[in-house]
Length: 144
Length: 168
Image (tube, rainbow over all chains, first blue to last red; front, side, top):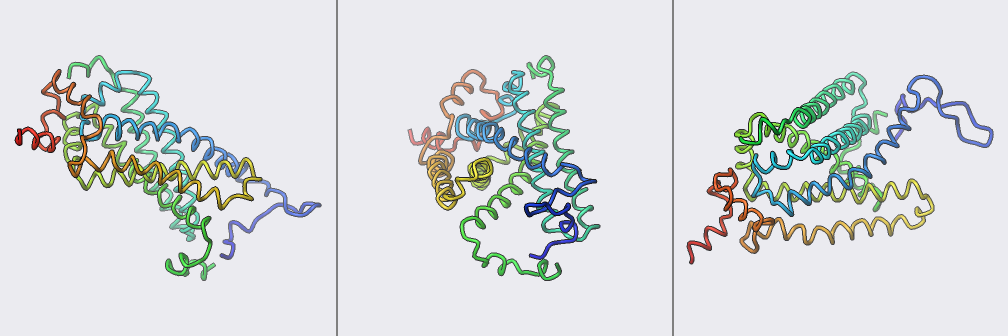
């Protein structure tokens, strides 16, 4: 594949070969993004696989209902676990979606439009989920 | 640039990038699939606090064989994405393993396939009446203590158990 315009910029040539990192705008965002994908990915291996094994293989989806979930959420540890799972999974997924959008949608206007839509939906769902977990009040729900 | 964009899907997939290309494609596809499911899943689960009746209606509609297949696909997607992601992290931080990168790909495939065998059995066998639903004992205990729990009232629930009782 030939390089798109935005990839063409690079820093000054290095003495021993290669190029310096381009300076100026953008900063080190892509480096942090690369690190974040590895760190969040390693954390998610434990959080997401535990979540899947617990609900699909130990409890059984067939036996799920609102009471099972509320009983689980009465424990603040599991609310914190779920907040961590939602935050890491959504941000990891959003950054992954950004990679795909930047790879496949090259028209600048369309790229911005698709990014805006995807960011809004993903971050919106994340906020709703974290809001539900954080405002959960066992006192008002325990006798439901 | 224009030529690159016009490459057809079939032509792209016939590119012989071998193992590395296929793991990359599957990593993307599973990642995007998981994200789509995740958006729906967290919104639906968020209803449990303020609208538990709606949540229970959502869940009742999920308790079909078709949804079980979808849940298995999601389990596979997360497992593959996790094991392949771990392979990528290992290769990034210890570049010398790149000498053995092809073997690492096959090790990834072996781990995923071996783990999927019992997982598929546990999740799918109950659909065909070949085994109890996972967690059946715990569920039976809960329904004795609280027969009014939504999952205990569901008529379609545990069809194999009901059929067994009729036979007796």
